[in-house]
Length: 223
Length: 248
Ligand SMILES: Nc1ncnc2c1ncn2[C@@H]1O[C@H](COP(=O)(O)OP(=O)(O)OP(=O)(O)O)[C@@H](O)[C@H]1O
Ligand SMILES: [Mg+2]
Image 1 (cartoon, chains in turn brown, green):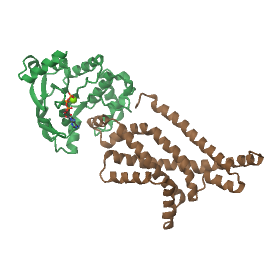
Image 2 (image 1 turned 120 degrees about the horizontal axis):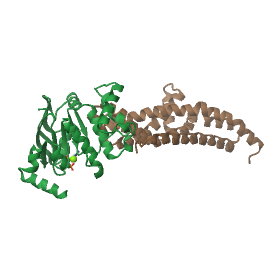
Image 3 (image 1 turned 135 degrees about the horizontal axis):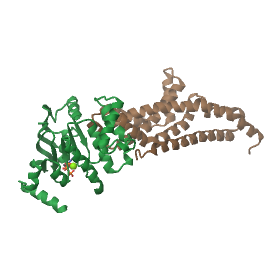
Image 4 (image 1 turned 180 degrees about the vertical axis):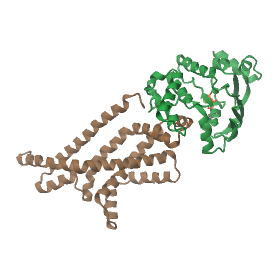
């Protein structure tokens, strides 16, 4: 099945795919994750603190995002809103990915916030700390630690999810594979190749996760 | 008078838990609050520091009057600045080192102590409870007794006028109780004003100078420790002392 022509295609495609992976897929993932993190922290803290009004809004947000497919969300914004307004495909991709993954991340972060013993909050008040001081120094760091594995899962799922950006005209790693296939017509080889590169990226992230987790656990720290 | 507490009432859902508690504390007093489980001792202490909001009642702290039900943020901060609280289960900040546990109340509060000065104060407080050598450890690396001593150092560091203790030795293994009681005894000797909910009769009898006996949300009897243990006036106090002595 792998004749010389196929092999040549694979070898030739590799640097191109890797190039798009490093230049587009990775930054797209990083930017989306950073914004998702900001959204998740804000939403989780609002729900944790029971802020009236805002809390309901956050619940609706999580409900809508979790109940609709990511691809539909991308289409809705890029083609739907794009029909009436000028939209930039990268802005749309990062925004939609961040808003989408942010909803899932806010849920795990909220659980982690709740799991920090309330007694530590009370102790903070008793030594005179403010609510925000307590959140910043005591509760949030512990919650981030607890939620870390699940947040990292979100990062990995974001990385794979960026392939959906191909649907809104962004040429990223997967779209590049499609384009090369249009010329070479080697779908099995090329899509397998791109799959392997995704797998490699995710494996690196998993390795990084192990290192970070080891660090976090080095001191008796939070169990 | 350092602290006058008047007519504290508190209901959660259902029956009234505190049915009008009065208590006067002089500077240097060590008051032991005794009473059977569920009598409202913890709730009473928590109301004094606004960890629970009382339904009514007031305190006069250092001559400053404060309504326990309606107090605003500013007043609450004022009261908390003069007090410290030691919990049954320590409640140390688990993501912070021992030293940071003690400095946070100095650096990240209205006290705004510079970091270096805070660390000096904190180390002194830790020395006082014999925990200075563990300054860099994390709470989970310490025994319960050590954690509670750190919690006491955290309380001391903010130089409170009174420290509230809620059963500070109840969560400890029997062999660790002594080290914490020793620290508390030393504070008492040094003139620290303390309000201590406890089941340690030895402490109540020999360290505290006043006893308050609570039952069913009321103060049944209060007075000098010696009198309370040698000639309790109320039948319920006598019963309580008898039941405790039998257990021991
Ligand atoms: N947050 C709360 N919500 C509802 N009920 C509460 C709450 N806190 C305390 N109670 C109730 O108030 C009563 C008194 O509780 P409290 O903890 O003050 O008693 P205690 O004297 O400290 O008892 P113990 O010796 O067991 O610590 C109990 O019946 C308890 O169930
Ligand atoms: Mg109690």
